[in-house]
Length: 350
Image 1: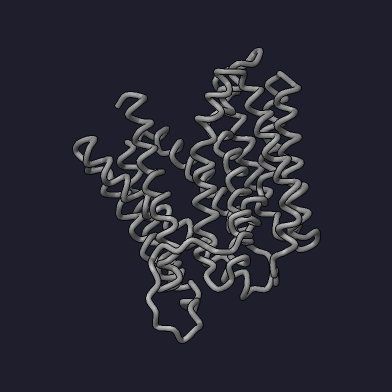
Image 2: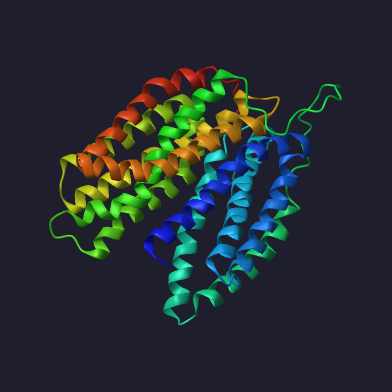
């Protein structure tokens, strides 16, 4: 595969996810988040296994589109079920869920490196991991909460599967999710390129930018629930965005490898609990149909995650990469201004 083909392949996954997310919100309302999580997680494992068997690019593309749909559906359903668990638990715990998500990414990357270093082929590595994951998924599904009864009215009227949330608050949160995940997407694709342009940079040092971001994000999320319970959602969201903005400013103002690594690490700390709070807030903002609220915010956020990296590229080519970081700093400033007022309007019970 050429670089352009690889880029198109990754885009196919994203398109499938964006199409599926609003549909998943409607399905959750009808059958419950626990069932959607169950079907999607099992399908996730099965599709990963079949991907290895695709003989050509076309069949791979079709399967990756389906994989993106399953992945997007699982994202929405897991967050919707997380809101339900948080309501039953009566304490803020969404950040811990996202922290384990980030930790899983770190562990997965580490295990992949270890398997390849030991001489396993990518196919062998994937099949071993899939076998383990499939067993873990089947064991975990039995602990999900019973299906929530979302439609409490006695109306028998059938609603269309895709119904956009009517609450303006949900769309404001979706806009915040767009800004935040645009920054997160830029971290994934541009940190190494930024560091490689700095004095005395090497390929191994370039990888430290995203590693620092991922590590601080995982730690921040695992500690975030305790902080939220003491400080409150609004202050964590505001100060987290401020810390992330300061991290980007450090990246711009300190043109050294250590400055970039520390700056990207601060972005990870700052953003670690912002996304969980926004996703959780979407469920509270649309209490009669939390799946739809989360689907709207997740879809907009995912769109920001996708559009962020190419937008950074256009700005970097037209102005500079530092100019792109400053643009993201402005977006974070908007979150600082808008978010607290929105969060205070939510009927939080955590």
